[in-house]
Image 1 (cartoon, rainbow, N blue to C red):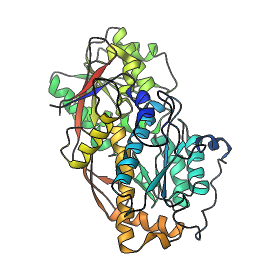
Image 2 (image 1 turned 90 degrees about the vertical axis):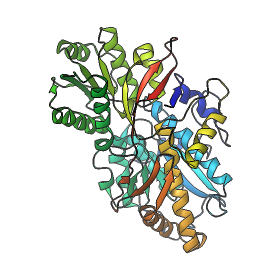
Image 3 (image 1 turned 60 degrees about the horizontal axis):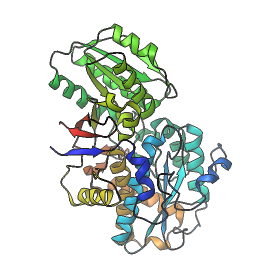
Image 4 (image 1 turned 135 degrees about the vertical axis):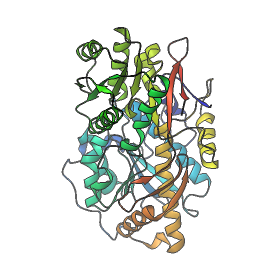
Length: 430
């Protein structure tokens, strides 16, 4: 079984080392392709702006086709967003090296959504009205998507969510789709894996971040799964993504003497809760939700990350030319051993860019897109995205008419920390 070898803060170290132009300084926050666009977010209005003029030329970034990348480069959410930046940058180089859109290159334009709704709103407005992108891959959080996606939908700008798995995302509007499989499909696999490891599980304790839309959606799926399997659900604990002290929640859960604990949160808060549970003596199985699906939790919970089970929508073991290309590019950027494998957030963002490129290429073969207005191109590519079929690092995918991703291959990984307590691997067990 292939292991996904991961270093404690690999995403933070790798962002500046990606082998494309316009990379940021090593170890720092990624520099946006457009130079100063991230800084412009602060001045964007939080009020939805008018749709860009329909007479604007489709390729407004020189001879390149602009595609927006709106993910979290700062805040605690950057532990996820920086992996998405890596996936986007690899995709930009890979597809441009292959000729872009029938000979026309793409240009990715980055806006930092940070970790809240206003950050995502500002980023979307800037990309739509100032940067005049054809479409947007983003945002990082489902919580942000519920606020920012309606703006894109009203402006008739297609959006592909790279990591928005909460219930209701595709239903936001006709121009909203996602390449991230819904939590209701992915999360139950982790419970099945836990029961395979320990068939004697009887009582399950659950905690979730009540201020995060995805975590609330995910915990609902986990709780429904626990009940469906006739397991006893202990009183549910809540916390905030901004919390650092989880003594109250951890103590309450341990007092119920659970056989399994399930945590739905983000990397920073979720990792801290894992650590504090272990520090207080919990030795049973732990399931982490999709927000913990990153090696950036290793510096948070360190050796105590060992054994955490996480359901996944991506595996580096997927046998396809496109996944091999992603893995090779991901490893080629690294200067230190051991070479690491890409994770789910990297692969899903790469896939988001891929879908835009392939949809644009198909559309261009039908009717040359260089003569289309930006408004017409946005509408046409949105229609083509939903009609297409794509061989991606996630496996073959397509979309329902509503914008939900059709994906059939899913996995479960279990974290194995190395003796140094700093580095570790995601071992695929299903």
